[in-house]
Length: 262
Image (cartoon, rainbow, N blue to C red; front, side):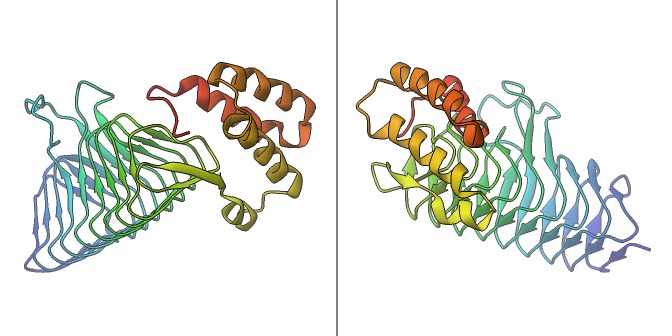
């Protein structure tokens, strides 16, 4: 049977795998589904239309699946979806989506979410990310795979952060961040490529050199954004070993909606 502490309150309609553990004084709502081997610590509230995958761990005092902090929300049955093997530390708050967007907030797989992190409505977070203590996402934010947000980093609504980017401590972002870029400060400024992170993840020297060349075209060549896009396409054609990475940076620029940190 599911290991539910006697003091926990689990709605009979909730769907929990038989291997799920629920700690003391936690509350699980009627529209919640939780997959195998997930552990819910003490004093955790999981509500709303929330689906949680396998092998996750929720530490104490988190609020998961609560209504969006959006005055336009009128009780619509929007959702929160959490993947597999995520660690969610103390005092985190994840909200469901809104009908003004996709109607769902998502967190992928293998993420490490530290204490006091907020995922607002309609955020889309990839996999293998690290959010340090007090990282905060406003609504409609998109975060790529392998992104690192340092402590007290804040992201403005509708911003996008590309894969493998690194955001420094106490940085406030109001514009988009291309893939692989390392930035920090207030106002936020780019300080090069996240080289150490790329090395740890097995990127080759040729790939890193290609990313650095693309970074220089965007940030060091005095090109307009449109000129940089054209130059990136040429670099992509001339550098087949790093073409995939350069293409990712170019396509990100094409999809940036708030301008980029530059």
